[in-house]
Structure formats: structure tokens, C-alpha cells
Length: 283
Image (cartoon, rainbow, N blue to C red; front, side, top):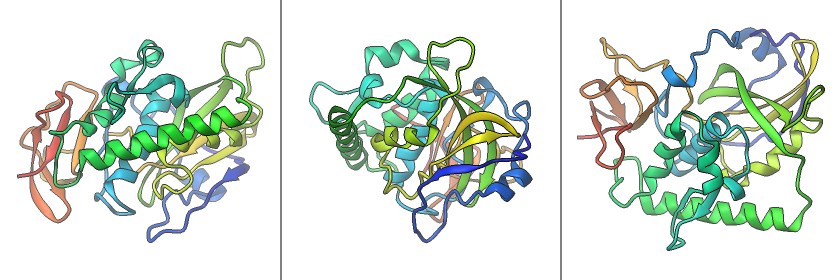
């Protein structure tokens, strides 16, 4: 998709060793894709597209992964409604409202949440650390929403992907929910306030951008740049190794035995013990 005239109106730029999400008006026009080129969620993979920890730690990376997966499979960022604390208060899980909104069974969302399970220990994941961050950020999101006016209801739909330095930029069209006729979401930059649950604004993997001019037409879009994205690029069973510690699949392909590298180690993917759709790169 060509971004012939993208006017960025909201961008939180975070300083880090690797400048994630450095897309500008020029780079977007040069690298973005037609929506038809991007595969549908039913045949795409997630989590695993470049060298792990290229821009930061695995906790921040997985929080950003969750934000992208939530937009993809729940079609909105409403973490205080679509998620809840588990009974013991030590982890985060889908709520009944979130379950009811799931697209494609929420395989991507469930894959990230499953990394909180005690047995989900890998060379690149500490379940206790991830669960603690998810709980703290969910509570931060809840406190912020309790103290400020709520935003107009919104819906998100992915329309484009473009490469960036530490992953891919995922663009979602933002519209007013449950409307007919003119549904443009008038303040897309305000949706950044809905990303506190994913560590915003301090998460170096989570670069937020918004625009009100898309291909020369009034259209509200928002973009996030997680290190791992909803794309199959980089995953191959023939000759090359995938630079990823964890892959969550959304298609029937098994990655067992495929070459992978994780934090300097080269080995093969193995199905995880905690999730039938999650494969880990470890000995």
C-alpha cells in the first residue's frame, strides 16, 4: 500500500540503542504494502522475525507483541475490559468479554499470555518476570482510566505492514465502534493512552504513531512497532535459520526441527510443553 500522503500527528519517540519504529512519511511511502499482499491472520505466523533482544529485553518485547496481537485478534485496545487478573492476582488472562471478541481463537494473544505459565521457562523468557510486568501494567491502565474520561469506543483493523529497524510497523485503521456512515475516529493519537497495559511509553519496542491522512484521503490510522510481528517473513525450513527464541503459529505448519538461533545459540525449534501453538528455540 502506498502512503502517498501520511501526516503523522502523534509520535512518542523513545531513545534506545536501536531506534525501533523510525518510519517517516518518506520511508512509509517507500516500504509499505498493499493490504492484499499481507497474508490473512489464518495463514500468518507471529512472534519470531529478527534477532531476539535487538532493542531490549524479552519482557518489553512480549508486551509489545501482545499489543499488536490484541489489535489483530480483539480489534481494539481495551485491556481493562478484555483482560482481568487471574484468581491469585499473579497473572493476567482473557476476560469473558475478551473471549467473546476473539478472532481466530485468539491464538496470538493466548500464545503471549501462555509465557506467564511457570513451566514456560526458556533461554529467553522468565515467566515470573513477564507475569509481574503484565499485572503491574494492567493495574496502571485501570488506574489511569478510572481517573480520566473514557475515550470514544473504537475498532481496529490491520491494513498494512512495513519493515523497520527492529521488527515491522503494523498499521491499523481506527474507526468509531458500532457506527454507520462516517465512522472515522477523530482523535487517533489519543489511542496511545490505551497502551499503558503494554508498557507505554517506556517500552522501547512499542513505538506509537498516528495519522489522519491516508493515501490522500481522510482516514485515521495508528501504528505500533513490536519486534515480532504478524508475518511469516524470516521463517523457513530450507537452508536458513530463523532468528527467534519463540514462535507462536496461526497456521497448521509445524516448525519442529527447523533451524533457529536464540541469543547466540543455534539449534532447532521444539514444540513447547505449555502451548500447542508455541515453539521454542532451545536445546
